[in-house]
Length: 392
Ligand SMILES: [Zn+2]
Ligand SMILES: [Zn+2]
Image 1: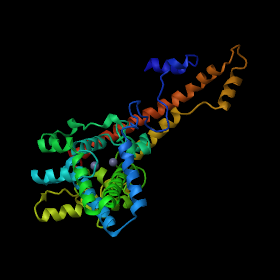
Image 2: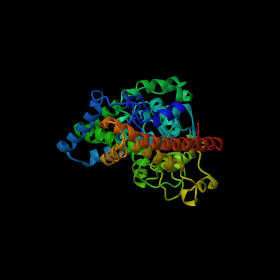
Image 3: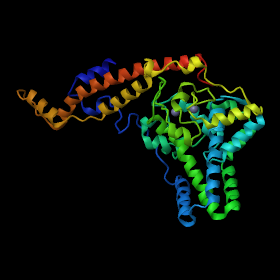
Image 4: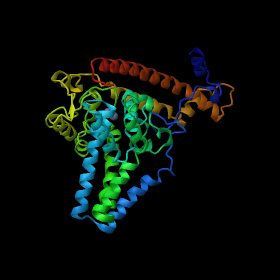
């Protein structure tokens, strides 16, 4: 630390030897291996193109539109009820048979396997909106939406994070051959309504399914209202709650992750939960976790709970803004004047170095504030785990 301070205070230390913070446009910068693999992304964009081509060539017929809607909402339910609320959060119980049905149903949505999906999602909740969060919008909006999925680094399922389900051979099998269920569904769509069925029915619903699911990671961490003081940037977004059958109540969800119900109030429509509730009446699922009145009404920002998530995010943005600040020409001229009486040749580099003292001190201050915010967030997280809001 002392070395650090002494280099800061010596303006004539060459720039290269000073502690440098990473520069970039976002609060958290990505490492060099976090880049989209353009070649491997071609099939992803090709499906978009084929869906569009289908609309141009065949237009919308009643049959294909109905097929598209059924495939969209049917598969969305498996993603939200299965991949998300069951595999990632264990928010209810079910039989081994129905667990397998949920895995196959989720795989038809072409969002990779249940272990991949739920494992990465558990990581998101562990590190929400910190530098370790793979898809925080603080690393860039586009990256949080789809960039991270098209990057080789996160191609594998983080099996360590999801050992509880990786122990089932049938789940590992579906996770490995996750490409098969979508293609079977594609063939079925073709048999039902021909090329229009494949493109407008299947491909279009798949594309819509992708982006609406991804909106939860991108939009629902940027746009919407925050009711609960969570240690992330999650929002409640009614529009996304409609298209994702309840997942838009994302701030509720980050607050009480172990809950099978994400719409906490009657007006917070949560179609996934209604489906699960119906299945519980016929005993297919059981032990649906839901918030108690006490949980629902505590930790509200409007009642004065400290919004640690936004506090942390704003400091992270401030840190990035400071790190990206270059000394202005005005600053450089002031330094020139201050040193005018001294017999020093003011080369441009030296002036820049002198100005970086001010900047580095500010950076240190912002960084320290960010660290204390992170400590506070960790305490918050521990408390959430202790009172059962987080599972597993
Ligand atoms: Zn989230
Ligand atoms: Zn979640």
